Every structure is written in structure tokens, then in C-alpha cells.
Amino acid sequence: MERRLENWLDGFLEYTENTEPPYNFKLWTAVATIAGALQRKVWLSWGAHLTWYPNFYIALVGPAGQARKGTAIDLGYDLLHALGITLAPQALASPQALIEVLREAQEIEAGEKGYKKQAAVSAFCDEFVVFLRDDREMLRALCDLYKCYEYWSYKSIMRKETVLEGVYLNILGGITPSLLRDTLPPEAEGGGLLSRIIFVYEEKGKPCAFPAPTEAQQQIGLDLQEDLATIHKLEGQFKYTSKFFDLYAEWYNHQYYHLPISDPRFAGYCSRRQLHIMKLAMICSVARSNELVLKPVDFEKARKILEVTERKMPMALGGSGKNHLMPVIQELRDYVIKHKTVTYGELVEAFLRDATELEIRSVVTAVGMHEMFKLSSNVLEKSTKISYMGG
Image (cartoon, rainbow, N blue to C red; front, top):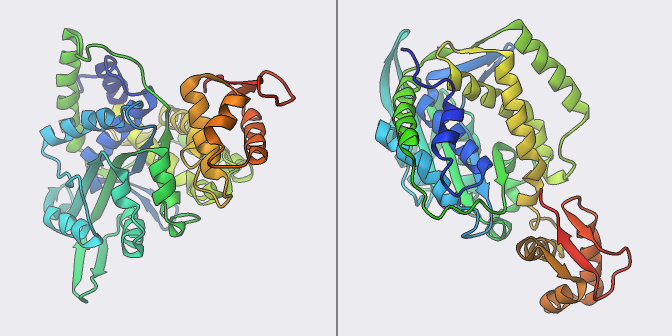
């Protein structure tokens, strides 16, 4: 079927131009929406044993009430809901509740190669925290479900076993940096759940006094729905061109020795980076075409999206390290970002209940070394200004 839009991702951004969420929040919402529509009906076989599916775990991270995380999530939720895609409830209190949603979603799909079962669910939740409870059962289940196993079994505390065929879980949620800092369990770090999540960090969106689509944008909205229905019908294995492979191989070999994030908490994420970019390339491919062929344009677009997102990714976890001052560092950074320019004396007064002046001095020095901030003097005095330069 012929598409109405040249590119679904670009169309979504044009459709949502007159809304307040940051650009990157809307872009990743569009990615999650396509992933939700595709379900487990398309895949990429890589090498002798690897099979990848286009599902994502995406967390939009930003201050409460400023970054409009919920608004961005709702934009994608509404499109999938109108399409009739199975969506998880906003609150999932336990692994058993999540498994039950997947069990109820299990269906038999008729395709070119016969009938095939899938249990595909998208969870678009305002609160990503529901997936970060200090619950080892939930963490293990989420890590397993990310892999989209052909057959997956789960045994509850009551020793009751549930077997699902063709699992596919796609998540988009919002969370504040402070809540992420307080709820991220240690078990999630390293090669665990943390390595499977795309953290999209933004401070704030743009003001929009009357967030309503223009007549032209309303038409784009209808086109988005029509094309999303077409995307939902796609099925089969992705192929790739030789030029796509060459680009990927060059990128993979370079990034193997030059990791984009030095923060040790993202070591697990970096080890899965090739998986993230391949999933993203699949999304970029179906955003422009029904042919299920990965081309250089798809890899380049995926790389750009991922690299831009990774620049701010460590800020999402700014306060969740082992250093006892990490919460103070994150809160101080947020304070400066909010006020744009403050003096060192004002910071001491604001944070003296949380740390000693010597500790605050060391924190301010560390923050001042980041390219997003600037100190008016190399010598810290009460009148020294700390300014947020953006980023």
C-alpha cells in the first residue's frame, strides 16, 4: 500500500510541532509508537545465531512539570489506541500483573508463512517507576521479556507456571531524575535492566500558550494514522544492503574501542549499543518504506538519533552513583539550570543543610568543569557566578 507521508518519524514531529515537549521526547515517542505498531511480526537475523526485534524500553527523564513527559507519551498512546494495539494499564503492581497482561494479549496471527502466536504488549506509562521497584522477580522478568523469546515460561511464587509464545514487550515511560535516583535498584545496573533502557534526558520543553494543531497538522495526523495502520500490517525478515553492512561494520569496530559514555554505570548499555542502533535502524526503515530493507540512510539516521541522545544520557542518572554527594550534585545542577545564573554564596545558603561548605565547594568545582556550566572566576568566592550555558 502506498504511503501518505514520506517519512513517519518526520511527519510525527511536524504534527506535534505545536506542543510543549522537547524535540527529543517527541522523537523517541514516535520511535516507540512505530515499535508498538510493528509488534513481533518483523525481525532482523544477524550472523549465525542472533535475531533482533524492534521493541524498546524508553524512559523520558526530566523535572516534574517542566519537560512535559506525559504530554509526549499521550501523543503516541492515542495513535496506538486508535489502531487497536494492546496497551498495558498504567499501573502494574507485580510481575504477575505484567505476565497476565501478556497472557491475555496472546493471539494467533495469520501470515504468509502460516499461523503464528505472539503475545505483544506496549506499555505507555506516565510513571516508568512501576518497572523499577526493588523487586528481583520484576527485574528478571523485564530482562527476559526484552529478548522477545519464542517460548518463555514464568513460575510464580505459588509455583504456578505460565508459558507464553512469541513475547514482545515495548515500553515508553516518564520519570523525574530524583525519582529515578531514589528507586533504581543496584541489581538494575551493570548488564541488567539498565543496559536495556534508552534514557532520554531533557530539562524543559518550549512554551505553547494554545497547543492545538493547525488545519494542515490535522491532516498530517490523519495521514499518520493511515500510515501507522500500514506499518502494523508489515511482516517478515529485514534484509540489508552491502553498503548498510559496511557502514555498520565500520561503526561497530570504531565504537568497540571508543565508547561514547565514560560513566561506568553505562558500561552494560555500551555493550548492547549495537543492538540499540540495529533496533533503531529497523524503525527508521519502516518509517520511510514498506520494503523491509535496511539501507545506509537508515543507519545514518539511527546513528544520529542515538548519538544525540547519548550526550545527555548520563545526566538522567546523575544522582544514583555510590558517591554520597551524588544527590547533592544532581540537585545543585538542577538548581543552576532552573535559575540560569546564581552566585556561589547563594548555593552555599541553599545547600548547607545537605552538605558542608567544603563539600559544596568541591561539588561546585566539579559542576563548573562541565561544558554546560561556566564559572565567572577560577577562585570560588561568595560573589562568583555559576551560569548554565545550555546543552
